[in-house]
Length: 207
Ligand code: TYD
Image (cartoon, rainbow, N blue to C red; front, side, top):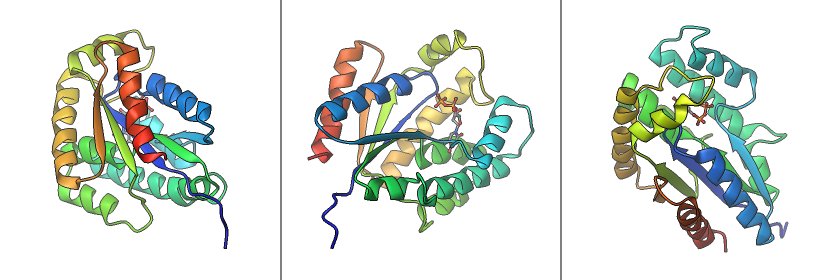
């Protein structure tokens, strides 16, 4: 029997511009300083499917809401099971896996654009899509998100204030429905305060 300890699977969610990249880096530093091994990953992935999704997100190709939902699921399955650097493989090698977006994004975004129950079922009833140990939702007023996004060269098809408002409300409905372990951290104010809350949430599961 192997005595290798399985890592923890932590997902960051939040609207575009809510500070995920910054807080993922800070949490990685925190966990590494505690002597843990950490692997950071993101969805859409770097696979061919991820490329198709990024083309659709930037508007280079047109995709229907159903196509987007199905492509995200396919990309997510690949993300779980790919034997080289998939989530399952990294966890079983003892890494804590921190993932920038996961099925909560599909439920909030695609679930708002097409049939919610279908999107829910494809993701939550899929035996090859693992449930995270923890989801950290970085909460920020959509208006501030849009302000922060203005400085960016590239925006995507979901980044309007009206849409972000809709997705934020959807996220909260999804959290209620799922009953996953979700910690909500407000990122409007002091970054150090938010980073401490994130670290505490992770420490509670990374013993
Ligand atoms: P990206 O610029 O890669 O990352 P972020 O905005 O998180 O910094 O954008 C990813 C986009 O993809 C974002 O608008 C949300 C969207 N998305 C979905 O709609 N459904 C999903 O399942 C995932 C993973 C992402």
